[in-house]
Length: 344
Ligand SMILES: *[C@@H]1O[C@H](CO)[C@@H](O)[C@H](O)[C@H]1NC(C)=O
Ligand SMILES: *[C@@H]1O[C@H](CO)[C@@H](O)[C@H](O)[C@H]1NC(C)=O
Ligand SMILES: *[C@@H]1O[C@H](CO)[C@@H](O)[C@H](O)[C@H]1NC(C)=O
Ligand SMILES: *[C@@H]1O[C@H](CO)[C@@H](O)[C@H](O)[C@H]1NC(C)=O
Ligand SMILES: *[C@@H]1O[C@H](CO)[C@@H](O)[C@H](O)[C@H]1NC(C)=O
Image 1 (cartoon, helix red, strand yellow):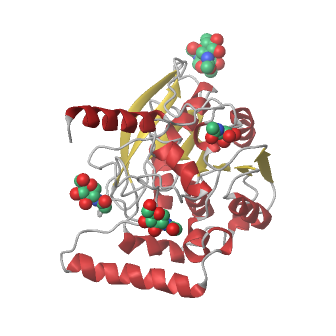
Image 2 (tube, rainbow, N blue to C red):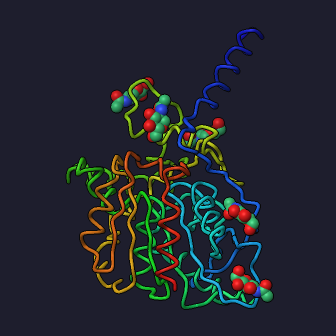
């Protein structure tokens, strides 16, 4: 390629990377002057290490006991994507918050990287409760710890809360039930034969890996936008593959971000986060979804199965990914009120 053409190609690629839609205050990497942020790590009950960030108001002092909220990121993402933003906004409102990387992702331990194991994802929320309740310097009140899950973490925090009543108030935003998604696809788009095919493919991939083949990845966000990309693919691409939300954690590579390994993805088939969801009552639950979200079925399903007190909050005009980072659409005020009341 001659130099002039190479420069034009490089410019075109750079322009693509800038072509993100930052309307409605998209501000994934927001930092607050009023909040201290510091990296942390802590053990799960199974002695694996979870990486996270701790956020607290600069006014934090040892003379008060503080409420706390643990925030989980979208499936396939890391805490730098959406979770840090929610954690920062809640810390501004007077909560100690922790954003976590689920095991096998980002700064959390676990091999193979990008593996799926929903029980351990849920355990990471309980491990964060352990952490918050044992840091004497923070003065977090053990009776005032809540959980918030975005996208896939919405289903992980519900799974955690069923077994961990130390989580006193549970909110989800743009929830994906990763179990139903793996079994049935979005809006029942996958039939039983297709499911069996996916299971067989994942099992076959175990042989491939044992035989020394390169690890294969599945689903996730398109690496390049194609003309035939669906609206859902475009929605994710605009966030994960542009400066709006792109983030590659240390030790990973851009073409691996958002992609779970093929051989482990089917672990979600055995994941039923909404079974027994009613046992979370009387702890309050808040389900937030855009009324335009392609994922709205999951919040509706969880809401209908949960017992009181519960609320389903529709954000008018918002799509699924809008609630990852569009600060003018995410109902931070309502979330603050929910955790203030639920962790009173
Ligand atoms: C940008 O995103 C907003 C919120 O989803 C949407 O209403 C708008 O149509 C988008 N604009 C473009 C040019 O895609
Ligand atoms: C500690 O912080 C709380 C909450 O902001 C405040 O009410 C209290 O006055 C503070 N105490 C001191 C000693 O600064
Ligand atoms: C930051 O703190 C200042 C001083 O208390 C306050 O006036 C301001 O509203 C706070 N900003 C945010 C975004 O919370
Ligand atoms: C979309 O186009 C790409 C090539 O641009 C092709 O590889 C892919 O199979 C197409 N997908 C569908 C669903 O047609
Ligand atoms: C990711 O990119 C690297 C370097 O270009 C390449 O070697 C690897 O095969 C790619 N992996 C996948 C899963 O696309």
